[in-house]
Image (cartoon, rainbow, N blue to C red; front, side, top):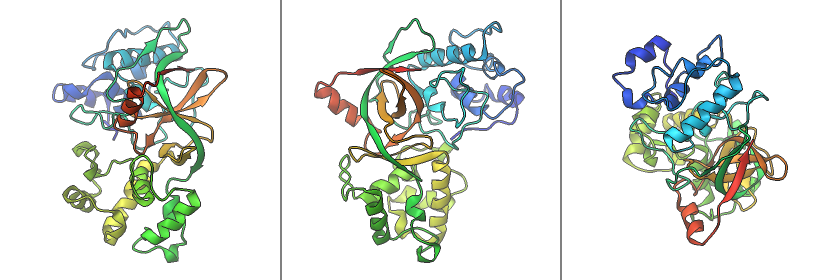
Length: 343
C-alpha cells in the first residue's frame, strides 16, 4: 500500500527515524500524488533525501523523458530487481516516455501496488524465484531488453467483481456476496474449469483469492502496513484462521467488499488460453502476453508491438504463479529464457 506523506518537509523530518525505508523507489511512490512545477523535480527533489541515489545527478539539460528513463535504469541496477516496473499503471501515458518508464508526473490508476517490498523490506511475491534481472545492453536507450518466460496469452477480460455483480441485488445474500451454488453459475458463465490446474483448488476458492490478489491478512504476504486500518473485524478473524469469506457474517462481508474494491480499482479479471486466471491492468486486452521477467516480483502484461517488441501494460497477479514454483519447474525442464524488448 502506498504511504502518503503530506509535504516534502514531512519526508525530510522523518528520514532519520525510518531511514531503511527511504530508498529512492519508496520516496517516488510515497510522493506520487504531489505536484512539481518542473516534472523532472519529481525525481531530482528526492535525491538528497534518499538513503541511496545510485548514479543519478541532477542535469536540467535532459528532457523529462530522459530523466525518468535514467531513473528507471538506475533503480533497477540499485535494487537488483524490477520493482520500479510495478509502478507503471496509468491510464494515460506520455507518448514521449517509453511504456516501461513510469511517468511520475501522473497519478496511478490503482489504489495499491502489488509488487513492492513490505515495511520489513521483504517482497510480497516472488514470481521470478528471487532471480536478479538479466538486462541486455542496447544502443537504443528507449528500449529495455529483459530475459523472461511467456506464461500465456490473455483470452478474455472481465470486470474483476463480476462474480459479485452477476446476480440481481435481491438474490444476493448477506450484504451482496454469492453463495457457493450461485458462484458456480458465475464460474460457468466465465468459462472457469471446476478444478484450477495450477493449484488443484476448486474454481470458487481460486477466484476468491485472485480478486483479492492473495493479499488478505491470512495470506502471509501482508504486514501491518497493508492491513487496511478500516477492516478490524476481517483482520482479527482472518489472522486466526483461513476461512472462505462466503460464510462470514454481514459486517465481515461488507469489509471484504470494500477490500476487494480497493484491490481491484484500475484492474481487470482475465482468463488466459490455458485457463489461468489473474488480476491485471484494466487496459489489458485479448491476445496480450502474460510473462515472468527475471527480477520481477510479479508477472507482467505485455502487448506485442511488431516482430519482437512489446509495450509494458503493467503488473499482474496470476493465481498459482506468484511464488516462483512455476518458473523453477520450467527451468528444471530445460526451458530457455526469451528476450523481451520493452519499448
